[in-house]
Amino acid sequence: MTVLDHLSTFPRVHMGHLPTPLEPMTNLGRELGLDLWIKRDDCTGIGFGGNKVRQLEFYLGKALAQGATQILITGAVQSNFVRAAAAMAARLGMGCHIQLEDRVPDVGAQYRENGNVLLDQLLGATLHSFPEGEDEAGADAALGEIAEALRAKGEIPYIVPLSADQPPTGALGYVDAARELLEQDAEFDVVVVASGSALTHCGLLFGLRALGNGTPITGVCVRRDATAQKARVRRRLDDLAQLMGFANPVAEQDIQLDDRALAPGYGRLNDGVREAIRRTARTEGVFLDPVYAGKVMAALIAQADALKGQRVLFWHTGGQPALFGYADAL
Image (cartoon, rainbow, N blue to C red):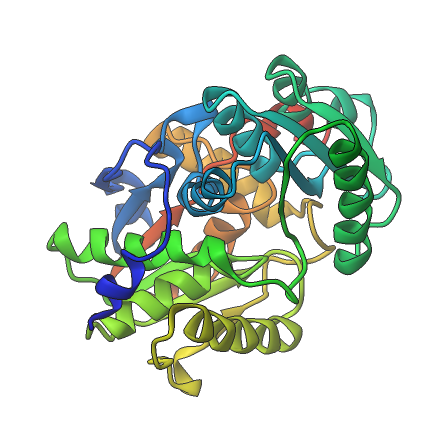
């Protein structure tokens, strides 16, 4: 069986606008001396789109197969993941409980009330709070308590997990995205993509290698430094292989990470990220979010001289609603 045969055995709800466009970034590429392209996963459609739609197609497929009536998910206050989950749950007629973690320090009212938070509320999600930002297992356990309360009321909850101790179901969406990219018949010298939970990064890397494509993938760190993130990526790749029942095709040297745009930490801006957001908007009319895609573009711009003349794919993971939560910082 091929990797795609294995992928087809998993339940899935098709809701994204796929395939997403693959477009040249002619103006910015000219300035940087690159043949620069963009994969528009900000255009996946439902609920302002983004990369999480591909992941949630598999999580919610599993939820439907289990007869779930309520979706439970946790994330940062300006999480794109939870917003997309609330939108997809609404379309499926499910309730949605969102647990918002305090991951980013020293934020104001814009961050806590605007952007994705406003959209979560418009979508009818029930919001909960979790005081820690770096306790994935604790956050999942807290969701478990909410799930128990829902079961007592006759609901059937399904938890979209955060912890790396859980199966990487969302990565399946990016194994499929690797197939999609190859079917768009474009070859690149390098692909740059955000690496946070690592499921987008791992799914794409696993899928390309399993389909016989050796294009280098650089994961740009948005939450942990390169050393910590490499350990997470390695573990999640092994977990994905186990989930799919398919041998891990990724070699150690394939795991490439860049943390130059990370400081001062998750969800916090630096001058390079601010400039990358402004520059991309003013050259290409494309908006980047401050947490993921903005940091990826900042890292790409910083290494442009080393990539001079190469054909580079920037994978846009979406998240633009978060811009409104960061109005003061921008």
